[in-house]
Amino acid sequence: MQFSDAVKTVTKETIVPMVSDTILKGNVFLLRTLGNAKSWRSGYQYDMPVKYKKSTEGGIVGIGGTLDTSRQETRIKLTFQPQRIHKPVVIDDIEAAVNQGDERILELLAVEMDSIAQDLMDDCGGYLYTGTGASGSSFDSILNAADDSTNFGTYANQARATYTSLKGYYVASVGALALSDLSTAYDAVEIGGVGPSLIVSTPTSWSAYEALLQPTVRAGYQTAGFPQVTRTGVVSSTNALSGGDIGFNALWYRGTPFVKDEKCTSQKMFMLNEKNFFWAGLDLPDYEKINTSERNIQGPQALPIPKGFNWSGMLRSTNQPAEVGHMYLVGNWMSDDPRRCGQLTGISG
Image 1: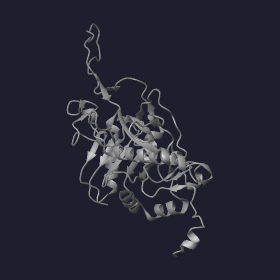
Image 2: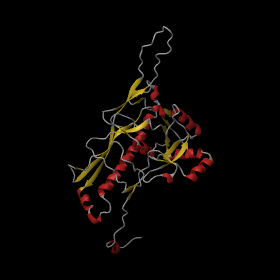
Image 3: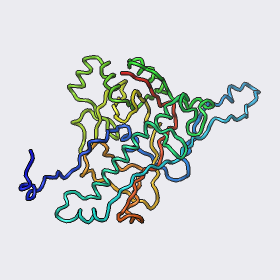
Image 4: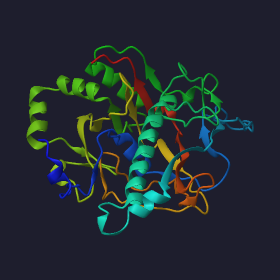
């Protein structure tokens, strides 16, 4: 309906005191890795000693026999460098001035910080699946961790051809998804009776797996509700979520939650043990720790403030009439045992 100026000049519009996100996508995998991060306390790189082979020295010694005193090298160091991504928050002086008093519906700075923080997390959700580990230019990711040297001949500065225990599980051109694809990948990633803790794929592949389930199983999910994967675990259904928790629908495969992630690369599926693939965040000295309000923005990117999230504070700009602040996420994703990471590619459905 088109109102006349006679009405519009004397009547205010209604502004809902909350901003709804209509662009960003949910990212359950990012929620899990950043929500259960480790600290990068100091050091120019993150070194992880790993054992790459069993010692063959020693053995049975008979009466009067000779002891073996040789020593074999069985360990190497995986090395990761911190990476940094940032987003600016810019508030013009005039905008700050007019956003005051009784006419203010939402606080400009708070809304802008909430929105930019979500954008930063959205960018990081992409790097989690696409980072190549190139020194100085890219995060590491599940992509190069879950590789058998097909695409990444080195991992953490070590050659996979030399140290074959650094090879993850990788299979290309899966085609139509079958239960045999899942079972083969699961068996490859399961070591010592400890299998994957999370399976993640696109909504399309998630639905393809759901279609493979028996009708009675599918009916059970629809009746009881899908289990909800949260930052720290799994609850039985949406009704079991506590206040403020974010839950993502999950299916089960061999007791492991299988979730759909809108940020996951098309036609890919990943299986991993989250104890062996994690985010290590570096907190910068003299930077502030803030808690984005979550009261002004509604959307899928709400996260607890993760390790490595740094805020510069608002600083006076030198070349514009404004204050500028910078949000950073500093650290890296890494795996101390890539054998426990796997990926299936080329899934057509």
